Image 1 (tube, rainbow over the protein chains, first blue to last red):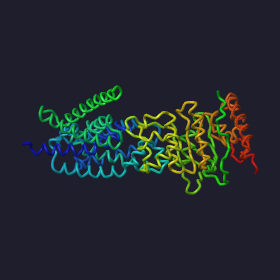
Image 2: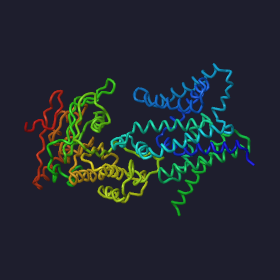
Image 3: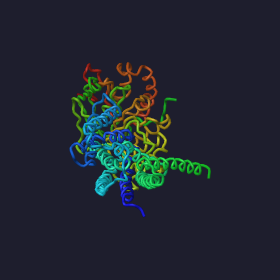
Image 4: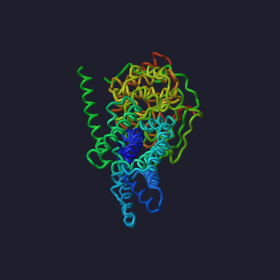
Length: 269
Length: 283
């Protein structure tokens, strides 16, 4: 007999893995891990805004991530500062600003750990609705832009010369990342969201022969991480979000091993 | 070692160039911040013509390509493309991300899928049909450049814009690849705008050379450019020596074929004003 909250936790984790898999692949291909991390860190700003202005926190994170992503795209047009410097500035000032803002509202009695490391066991029915609603939309959009996004990921100038609207595609992509961050925050927390994006994708690389296959394998790896992570968390009473990430890391290590074994079997039959 | 009789001579068997340029850029000026990268550059490419853009690093060659492609709006000047012009583009320093599992077929199927037969015929045209199901990361430098050329050809281009197409290819492969480009031009009658810093190999097989160093230093037929004082000061007398071997070879071929397209003569150096292909011609 498993309690309701566990089912909800499982459903939430799987819902996030469904979108984090394919989007994580793009993050890996585009070498945007730091971008994802920065966006996630500044998501706390959305939490603070939501608390202060009294609206849904997921919506708050969604809006703040989207605004930050677009702001970054704008800032990248100037060439004096490198992207990673800009990212660092945005991410950390966002994080710091939200902590300062939150300190003014001591009465809120905010449990920071909940946001930093997730609280998947406290996922509510309306959270689930959010997660699945937003992620179904995100998956649909991703399917629509898949080919142009992939072409732009391979080589932006070439895609552009072939008529792909690369700027629009890039904006769509960062907004999709913002959606994942907003929904994944509950599951693994702000500090570990990037892990859920890139580790399953990296594990999938060993076995994939096409981009679509890698996205599918990343979903499977993410789902397995959620199942094993939550199972482990239940078994050993460990924090759920970090346990999911540990499970993902273990899967990644296994994938490396399996990949190496397969290659050596391939070379000397 | 430098002389190669296999090089296709300029103008041999080329369809007659039509008067209207496929693409014409006039007075292109580009500034990045307070650094002027291009200064009043003129450039024109006609159908069936190979125009090679040469110049030292930082001369603005790739910037000019971006302007020509419409990716960069120049601070001043205009680019006129023939209406409905399709450009096939081969980018510089192309590399595939190692984490992206992709076959040649998957690559050619982007951004839109195409029938397998078309992919195969494009790959066959550049001599790498057998790579269709291989991972793109497993291709050699020469195969990669050919794949990129096949991709450009799939668009049925009127104009090929090739940014350093011989890059990452060993010397023997470079000659073969350059021959292939000349052959494609002859077969399809498309114009070719090529960027190169490899003077010896490319210049002799080119109809017109534009020597760029922020402004157009000189332009015209390869042998006239190679004797131009601004060219010599940019690349040194050695560059011209290397070329002389080709120029000789190239003249010889012309005599044999008897089929010589009139090439514009070398342009006047023109203080501040960029030379155009028509300078010194019949005007």
